[in-house]
Length: 181
Image (cartoon, rainbow, N blue to C red):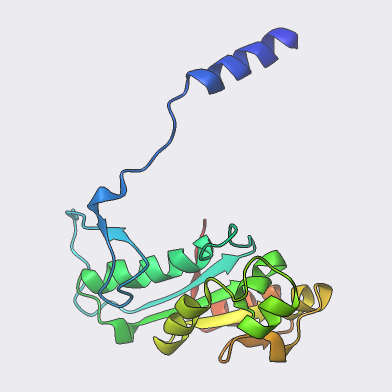
């Protein structure tokens, strides 16, 4: 057992750091300040009439002072497809939020009242921009109840569902695929 632990530790130390070269990534065309994506020479181009209905499951809260990575993934999904010829009107995205990530959808007043880091929700402007672009943010009511969040605490336009499980079931019935990661 001790030998296996030593081998495992040695393999971790010998592995190169998994850093991404972000120099080839750009933002836009829908969200100009966030949602970075890289241009890729595709083997098979996207169909001209492509329509996408996709949902994201986000439970991890944002790192201190940052925009939630799960929310950014949804913005990236929209930007990369729009940059590759998909009409943004044909891209429907829902972000189902549960666990501690619910706090990343708080109004600035609710954020400050909870003594979270800073006076305002650091991702609030990005969330509002995504809502304005038609992205749905759906909060798990069970998680919200568990951390004491009510509808009035949420940024205008954020929806409250009975649960994340219910939200995903309804979205799937309406033809949304679920982001697998």
